[in-house]
Length: 239
Image (cartoon, rainbow, N blue to C red; front, side, top):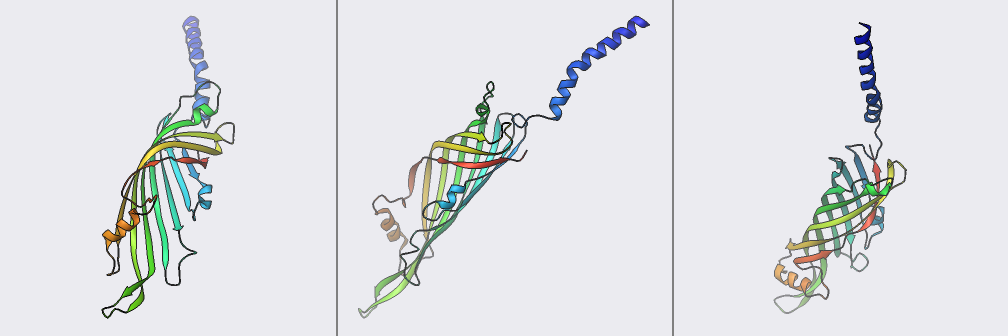
């Protein structure tokens, strides 16, 4: 019995040796390799954007070792002519943008910490803006007399985007946890669509559309436009 018992004990010892480090690795993985993970982000420079700016925040969830789903939401209060309007007039734009995204991270390479923080991504985008315009306008009545009246309308703009980006994360901590900064750049296309709503009876939607499109270098035309997304964001790894 001593021989079989000794062989059994030796076999159990051999099995337990590789099991110990494996168990310790699964209980406390490093933040760089742990999946899934949550990230939250913000773009503080957007607060100082022209003409007024806004705010943008985002969230990301890893769904695999090298893939993740992300989304960003922004709100923009844009006042183009706030200093040029007369009493009773307005030219104020407000709106939002929603951008879902899928990311593919690079395969880790050697000891380079930043290599595993870079990713390619495909981003979609939906923007909705409404500009409320109220202007004093000179009109003529049936007797030929001139008078002033405030006329108004709402210019509604929808943007549909698609773009490909390169993203590079730089964590503040050596293990990739906590806060960091991310740079991104890419190429894309934007489809714009405009509608003219809530018009005063004296106004015509087609005439307003032609007036906007006739301006030099006008961006208020239906059509396809190039996109050059470029910027930076702060992020925080939740876990």
